[in-house]
Length: 256
Ligand SMILES: [Zn+2]
Image (tube, rainbow, N blue to C red; front, side, top):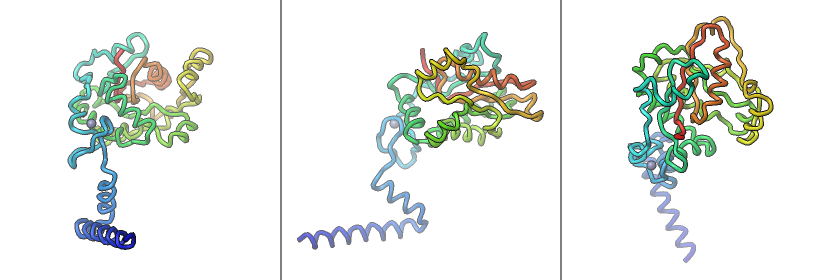
């Protein structure tokens, strides 16, 4: 009886395999289709199974996600966050970040669950909105907010990298990951707070540049704008480069 059942299962699996070989002569596509058959891709926002034409985020979530439309208003709330702190040309974020909302789920999956594709999708999405922006047309270099090398090894990737690469591809602007670097490692938020109180957050980032980096318009990119403290410190470091100008683009902005 058991032997008979095993033979039946074996035959069914063999038929499925032949079906996929016939349908997908390309081994990569066949493997991907088999994988999707047993582990269908789900939306990074709501976890429902994605339809064939959907990529990472389902259509319902795309419609539900709150957009800031900052790029349509130069004097937007994100720009105003930096009033009196640093001179900036333009500041914008694609989405609003609400606690326990879809965007929090997306950012959490991007940062802590290895779903780097979310960064690509958000970057491609925002690049389409920003590609005709007159201020961003004058940007020379994209600078992702860096992680400390130890944090980079722990996480395996910088969550902003793919967002930056997607922006770079559409906007045709190079990414530079060496001018700005992080020299202080901070493990948790409480450690960060302690660091900012005791050692001075200004010492967390430093720059390394040559004369060819003078007079550049840098586009600083990050995942979420909350207080803007990290971006402010990064911008202050970059503004030490003669003739530097700064704009900021983020995936999301926390609503306060
Ligand atoms: Zn969804």
